[in-house]
Length: 474
Image (cartoon, rainbow, N blue to C red; front, side):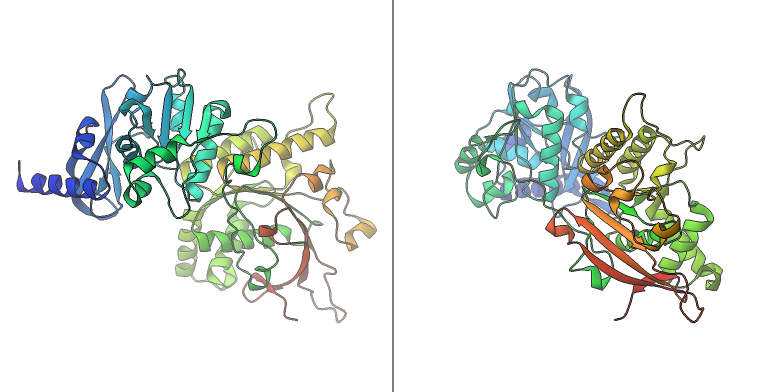
């Protein structure tokens, strides 16, 4: 054994001992020391290597973590799958954790080697779909995910995939995040007792409050406008609808709001835009949002810098035949979420979606069904879905008054179904002195949850010198 591998072995043993994992448990599961390259560190480091096996028992790859930090890497071509599947598929009960160390902790607490399995991480629940055939004989899944937001979301998704009727869940005591933390803070006996007190996952019926699992908390996103902070937030797993008469600025304003959110929280979004082109129109607006000046005032270096930011944060849908259907939008959005980690889907405008009512189905029922599908997509994929839709009629006297959500063409469900509803309206386009009026009002018509804010009005004005909306001074 070289000095380097001997050092890795000693460090792995010390790390495992600190986490309450015995050498015998590591050996039974084939966990081994290694020295692997970690891209986040830019170098090789001593590591604990977890082998992953195909359901036949053959090693198909590995995942490794540093023993002196929390960095992860994996073998070339590693595809997320269920860890310890080759043993667990023979069991009638499986305790499912969010990581390998937590699964090993449950073994230390007295569970059999074939009774534990682990997701590679909280975002890898889709690997359960690939394992469903191998898990057909399992009667009970005990969901032992982390107590944080990601763990709650993973637990909820796992129950959907595996079937609520076969699932139970473990709620960790206050101040404890996962199985390994509980093992370290208490002991193996107490950990075993906690997981044995699992609760059935609700299916259909009436329940006491204690029977219901804690849902993922609503995590509001700051819109970037200081005056909105006590009145209006956007959040993942929600559906919002925006309306307003054509030309009143709803597309530009909402794109600015999303650009500010995307910049602050550093995630991508996907735009299904069927009236406003990505080039040059969205690019022009986004360049201005990023550079704080109109595109015409930007030099080439400033444009290049803004474009680099846009390239890493925005995706656009473009149907090859320019006939986007509702199903195509959802399929393409799912690819954007899965491949690019998009957190927002913006559909603008709804009336360009080529998806007429099926024969014999009333339009209002069809719109309700579509909105339900968008709500389900938002919750399942942990994203925010926003639809911009025109009111049914915007001519004559109607154009001078702000519309309401039920004015949107097709259905009162535009008011009933969404979690949030917004109206963008300009009272006039010209001031009394003949100068151009840039003032707009955002009417927050609906906020289903208090974390999202409350119905109110937000006064805005368009600043032609920065090519951005700003809050109007009072």
